[in-house]
Length: 608
Image (cartoon, rainbow, N blue to C red; front, top):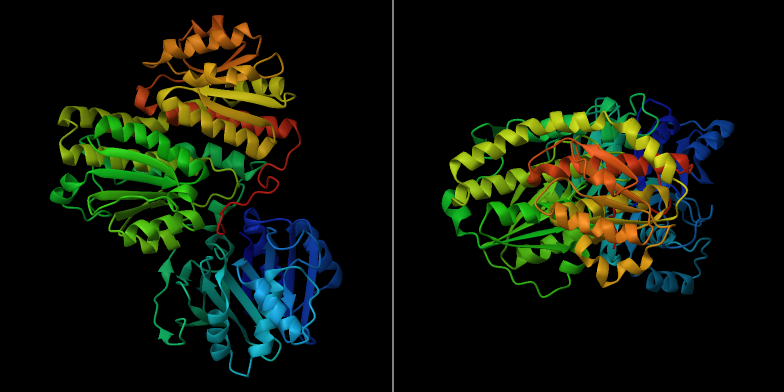
């Protein structure tokens, strides 16, 4: 889950690398380091903490040179120490290497190297890789890297400087993402596109097992056996401004407020008042859609909660058998699929290790695989039969907000298409739903305007250390997402339950120090939710409700209300999640937390 940047060109490499690491810091922030090739050879600097801490050391040392690699770490093997920080070097200082991923056989490799007299200074699998590289190198880097890959098990993105080569660097990719960028005078690589945006929007995605040599203005690629690969660059439709804070105190705040625009972007060109049109992206015949019998929705974290919302919509709008699974569980189960199974994999980054493994498994079993992702060139998007992009722009805050909105919208479009093409939605109802979707961005923006009310409630409850979140029906996944946001960025213990489960255990938690947040728009299950509120009130828990405008009854039962505009029940998650995002954000601010970079987390989970 670490962040990697490589650079060669006319600029001072340290400046470019630090800028890239700042843009990738959502991937890890335990420690950071640079290796820069200058007039006197390769200089390595490492520092515990964030990229800003590293930048101060780099400035003090006045590092200069036009070639280098950088790394921001999320610790896996070895504790958070300066010696375990990247880059790592071999004993002779011939190679400097940065690594994202996990080498599973590193202990066996380390023991063999130690038996040959190699001394190690860190506990990392990454140092094992660079020491092994130095042992097997016989002068030709391509031959060496082909050999190196064959000796390593696991996932890795490697970027390597060689002391003997002052004009470029090398990349190896298996499992962990790596993207290359080249312009007329520069060559770059990074774990993710935002680090490249200030320099180029022409990128090349390394495929599984590939090796690359990056020099000024050029990138050469070979497959895992060392055969040349011809690949054309892809134009990225993101720009630098999308990856900036734009005056907001945190990326998360900016991304919450972008959600109306995200909805417009997701729906644009795919929706009219007459219905949904995904023909430019999904080459599906009516016969194929009508042949489907199952839909499997597979995801992790926030993406999983978006899939849970979509499950309820698919059940309403189609006659398909729908199931939702957590990717890390799904991949190890005895899943039964056929060519009549549509397996939908939801991943913001498209690089989530468990989701990728689950997709590979069921594709091999014959399922039709569809990716719902935010990154056009992501591994998931390249491996599946079909893809639907969120079109949400880069999301930098570790806690997902606008991509949850984009995922729900994309999955709703899919459900609407399936219902229309299978004939389970009549034309009049499909038109009504399409028209309501078109109005959603305006309703989202009206909800966002009420942030001051949410801020006041968040201040009132910011001292509590435990929360219970409740929801019923389509609001239950929203409660799960709200509790996750509070946990992620404020470190407040929060649990979410289906409200009907209260009497089956969770009610034992209720007391005056445990507030209850209930998601209860005025829907078909409203009276049931109200009954659960009364149960909580009887146990003297403070009560907060996310409720619809005009619902005066709820005010008699709760201490505070977070209001949302009225909407059709099926669209309520787009609105009810917003005050929960804002509530978590402001509680975290009042508690003085690192909102964009919460402890122990990283944006993209590219290892198991």
